[in-house]
Image (cartoon, rainbow, N blue to C red; front, side, top):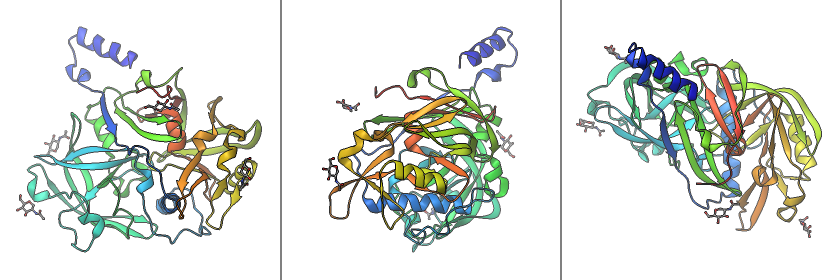
Amino acid sequence: MGWSTTHCLLWLLSLWIWTECQGQVIRIPMQFQASFMASRRQHRAGRTSLLAKYNVIGGGPETASRNSGATETLDNRLNLEYAGPVSIGTPGQPFNMLFDTGSANLWVPSAECSAKNLACQHHHRYNSSASRSYVPDGRRFAIAYGTGSLSGRLAQDTVAIGQLVVRNQTFGMAMHEPGSTFVDTNFAGIVGLGFRAIAEEQITPLFESMCEQRLVEECVFSFYLKRNGSERKGGELLFGGVDATKFSGSLTFVPLTRAGYWQFHLDGVEVGGQVISQHRQAIADTGTSLLAAPPREYLIINSLLGGLPTSNNEYLLNCSELDNLPEIVFIIGGQRFGLQPRDYVMRANDDDGSSICLSAFTLMDSEFWILGDVFIGRYYTAFDVGQRRIGFAPTRSQSV
Ligand SMILES: *[C@@H]1O[C@H](CO)[C@@H](O)[C@H](O)[C@H]1NC(C)=O
Ligand SMILES: *[C@@H]1O[C@H](CO)[C@@H](O)[C@H](O)[C@H]1NC(C)=O
Ligand SMILES: *[C@@H]1O[C@H](CO)[C@@H](O)[C@H](O)[C@H]1NC(C)=O
Ligand SMILES: *[C@@H]1O[C@H](CO)[C@@H](O)[C@H](O)[C@H]1NC(C)=O
């Protein structure tokens, strides 16, 4: 931000392009549920929805057709850390939205959806007739999810996040939301923060519109997830820069290998000092809590952790032995990013009410690692759209 501020002041001094200096930095508080404890079923569902997501988006990594949970009811309740307020139309219609770097479209439920579609009926719905700034688009859109398609029509309208007002944003009005995927979510729709290359219809994603319309100071957004021990406690999404008070040291940036997903090169992964993987790709995805590993690494990591495999592709860990588990280190841009057991072990309520410990490392039948909130929570993450790079630094410890 320092460079940008100076840059801006210089423009000001020369009294030249005033608009250069109108870019803003906007903080969006993310919601959280205090002392939220997921059920085992929700953990399973979180994994299933992750697999479904990467199974279906063109050009993405292939996923496990062998996954035994693939037909399970989708339920995203686990993955709500990064939901926050967005307003669409004039006057603004408010929505609570999931901010997802693992997809690139913006969609909300439509006021015209069927009364039988529960997911749609359970949430705020966008009514285009009630917006003066609505422009019909006419095109249909569909986004495939594991159990069916989310579909409807495209629209164009004003989308506001805090004081950032994006004009002429194209987005989806969902008439049909598949299965029970989105029924119980605390978000109505999704703001995809991936790149246009993975967007349906190549629609300009919201953040790219913010950059094009020069609404933000820098073409960068950052995620900060407050953590307290193993609890998740909300956090903050910053549009337009990074907040250096939220991390220690400096950000380690690496270039994106492809600007579609937030995909980058991983130098390697170590478990307790042992190198178990070299030269793989990773994708940073705020839309999942989990860490997905390619098949071979998935087996190695979970056996090194002493996990007990279950029939659901889960690994149970002994909750009394967590202190003896190793650090797991991701090497990115030559720097070491370690995760401790308190980061990668997920506590859940079993069906009988007892507390169990599950490994966050999930099977993904691909060459890719998916680094979800388990990683992004530990490491402040800067998504630099302008320079096509991603940066990580240790989140500053548990202060408010
Ligand atoms: C949409 O808004 C219009 C205009 O305010 C209103 O007449 C109509 O009933 C609304 N439709 C729905 C489904 O809420
Ligand atoms: C939005 O579209 C209108 C009509 O096409 C155009 O006049 C206006 O300049 C556009 N605004 C932006 C910020 O692109
Ligand atoms: C978590 O937060 C509580 C109060 O908000 C504090 O007392 C406790 O020490 C924190 N725990 C950790 C591990 O930071
Ligand atoms: C878990 O670890 C504790 C302490 O080391 C041990 O007493 C217990 O038998 C272990 N439980 C299982 C199911 O292995």
